[in-house]
Image (tube, rainbow, N blue to C red; front, top):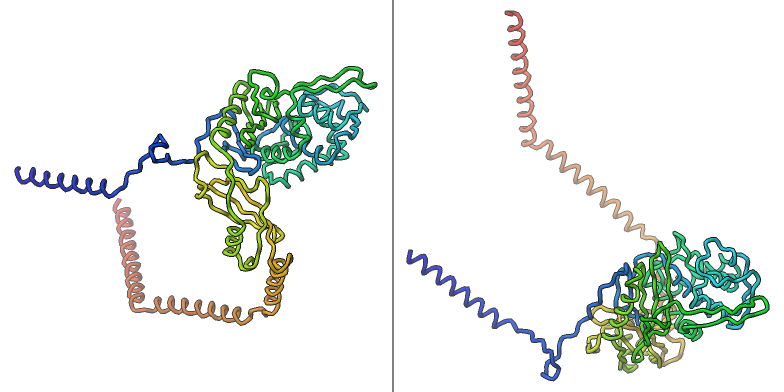
Length: 471
């Protein structure tokens, strides 16, 4: 008994010693809550808020960095936020004073939804149509504007989808300019953020979308003024009004639920928030929480890298840039978006090349999160086209080398011979194994077992016949 207790005590002491040594060997990480203590708290990517919407995204405008996402590539019906694409194509292809004549199809649409009661052949300017589309969400104005821009409804829809592909949208198919229900008319939160980002490049879109009220004056063909208030409650005067919000668009159908696009800015940083398939009571709550998340926890940081940094980076990537010179842009592409307090020295790079080897984009990543990109122009010290000439020369030399090389019949022949030899060797091995003494012995034993089984079977049959005879 004593020996057992003594042995247990020794084991416990040994385990205690191992535990103490382990604690001393492992350094403890201390998190400080006060920066004045001389120790900074570790910065990580902020945790986003929970939302009731089925899909949502927060994107920084200048970099395209995604700060928050929930099912951002899930496909949903967009409803009237479709009109952001309609407005984008209008400001891209038209002057604001161009005259739009309302077609009969716009007036007599089936299930017209929200409209401003336009009449056939009524005339409005592109600018007036844009206010009707973005503020009043007028489907008749969206139809009229689409026919004016695209020549026909089908032509405009084709323009919408082509523009979506150009912007990098992979989840989007448009079938109309207004967002009325159609099973094939779908997009995602991320794609709508990309479309809105492109629209914000135009001052006309910003001006129209930011207005809380607009009126179309009476005309000979329309004796009444058309007064329109912005449906977006963060822009108009409401309990949800937010002074940081400068653009946006609402949407709703029964199948789409509530959709909302909202743009806000603070301290030189602009963000786009998109929520899809939300409920009425939580629509602006979700949007407010997402905007606060983006604006409170992130900030734009300038990437202080000289041209020499990019030149050295390119030289490590490819020898054609050994004599290259980099020109840096003087715009927002020199900035990244980081969590507040994050260390910019942790940034990693990823290089992508355009069709022209002189067009290079450096993507910036912070702990696997894309936070921005810098577009640089590369030229050679020996001349503007030297990189292109060298690239073309390398490609031409490779092509000639491929042409010089004959078809490798020799390798095909030797490969065939090798296959035949391998098959012969395998067959020989099988044959040898079958004729080996061991296999002969096994076959003999098998035959003997079969003979014995037949003899036993004959005896049993005789016995059964004998029993039947005596009965």
